[in-house]
Structure formats: structure tokens, C-alpha cells
Amino acid sequence: LIFLPGIPGSGARSAAAQFPALSADFTCYRCEIRDTSQDITSIADAIAGTIRQGLMDGAHSADGDCMPTLLMGESFGGVLTLAVAVRLQDAGRPCCGIVLVNPATSYLQSDASDLEPLINAVPDAVFPGLLRTYFLGTSLDSYQSQLLFQRVLQADAPDDRDFGALQPIANLLGFVAQTLSPELDGLGLTKSDLVFRLQWLRDGNIEVNDRLGSLLCPVLAVCGEADRLQPSKQEAERLERELSDCVSVVIRGGGHALLGDGRLSVADLLQHSPRFRSGILGKKPMDTIGDFRMPTPQAVAESQQSTKLFESAIAPVWLCTDATTGRLVK
Image 1: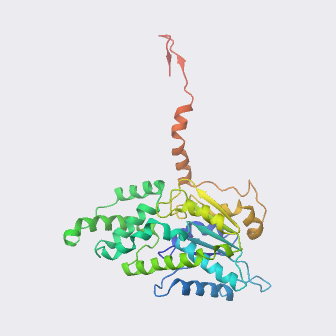
Image 2: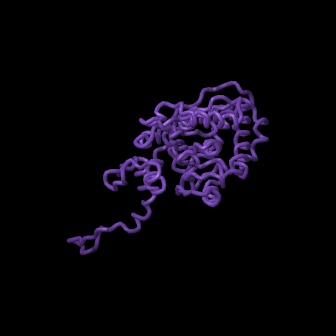
Image 3: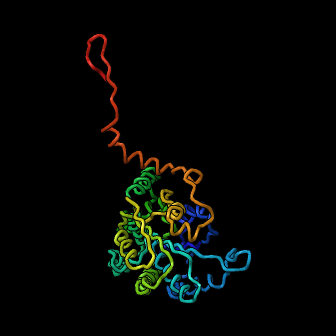
């Protein structure tokens, strides 16, 4: 399995959350994109070339044949995944399957694409904090936002810095960004880096959307219902229509950053998808008892919160008769 990250180019947090379970069926690799001087065509060519040549450790089976490759991409990584898959198929070395998580294949139809002209107008003093704050507001769902802003309230106040008239805004944005930086998975891009990488999205959207109908491998599209960064729910429906072999899963209440907080398991989705389990995993049949995994503490807390009103409405109330007054009391 090869994981291709979102626009920051790291994906370390998402991979760390998903790889332990996925490693039961796959040798897992994470592609990190640091060079911002290459266009998306060059990057996709390089990744596809590496896969074709089998240069990764463990990419060959015992008899020397190339092992099947599952590509997995998150956000921009979904666009890059499709670009790589097209190249592999054209070269006669198709991947065995694709997992797309909130793929940015709808970027040209999203509100985020309309913000590009404003980037250069943002003062350098506030750009890093403003970028992180924007992605916090659009990438996290309500559950994630509650958890993270509790951390902000518990953190120490920011130090004063000399930004002139912009000092209060710069301090606030910098404070939020620094406090929540572990959750932002390497989103420390400069203004020029961001402008260049948004061009990746534009070029990638034009390339892959023209080739969707030609892809033959099975695709699992995982999209958050409450994604505020892009219209992921509608994009899942479109991908099901345009790809020849695609199943979409819409995560109720999920935002754009689906992979990093432990509530979603891609390994479980693959195990419960007959198309992937029989054609790609194939190591063992599904065991409803042995394959059970305990839910995470976050998932338990969220479930309890969602049923609290229902429980209060139907929970039994115990009454007894007061021996002195004869009245019913709780």
C-alpha cells in the first residue's frame, strides 16, 4: 500500500493513525512530497516509475513477481493517486485498487479555488497563522473542533511580538496555530509554496477528471458528510457515476480531516467491502468475532454524547410510596 498525502506533502498524522491496522494485510509506504519546484506531471511520473520498477523494499514476492499495489490518497493525494493510477494502467502495470479519502477532484468547483487571488494580498506577518486557522475552520468537523479548542483554552497565553498594527491579530493566529500544530500535519507552507501547490490541484483536476471513465481498477471513495473545505459528499456520488468500478462510503458527521483522530479505520472499510476483501486482501475470511476491534475512547465518547437526549427521554424512572405520607416519590 502506498499512501499519497494532501497539499502539505506529509500525511504523517494520517498514516500513523491508519498504518498499524493496514499493516496486517499490506506493506505500507508513505510518500512525502517536499520539492515544490516540480509540477504534478513530474511528480506523478516519478511515483509511477518507482512502482513499475519495483524499487521499494518488499515490492516483490518470493517468486520474484511484482506484488499488487493498492494506492491510497487523501485530499490532493487523491488527485495524485488517480494520476499515478492512469500512468500505471497505460504502462500495462495497473494497480490492484484505489482508496480515495475526500479526494480534491472537485477543487475547481469548491469555494477554496475562489480564494487563490487573495493569497498574495495577505500580509506576511499574519499569513502562517491565517492559513492554519482557515484550514482549522474548514477541515475539522464539530467533534474535532471541540477537542482542539479545549486545548487552546488550556494553553498558556502567547508572547507579545512586534507586528505593529497587526500585532493583536498576528499574536492570536500564531497562538492558535502553535497550540494546534500537531493536529495540522505539517501545514507550515510559505505563501509561494501554497500558490505553487494550488497549481498542482488545478492541473491535476484537469488531467484526472478527463480520464476517470478509463480507469478499470476498483475504487473505494471515502468522503465526509460535513466537509466544509470542498463538496465531498456530492463528489462521492459523481465518482460512483463516472468510475467504472467505484463504491462510495459517506461518513456521517465527518469533516475533511477524516484519517487522523482514530474514529475511522480504512482497514475495517476494506475488510467489509466484498470487492476489496476478495480481490485484494484475501489473507483470511472475515471472522465476526476474531476480527472485532474495540472502539476508540473518542468513538465511545461521541456515541454516548449522541444518545444522551434519547436516554433521558426513555430511561426508566423508579417510584416508591412514602410510608409516612403515602405519596409517590422518585
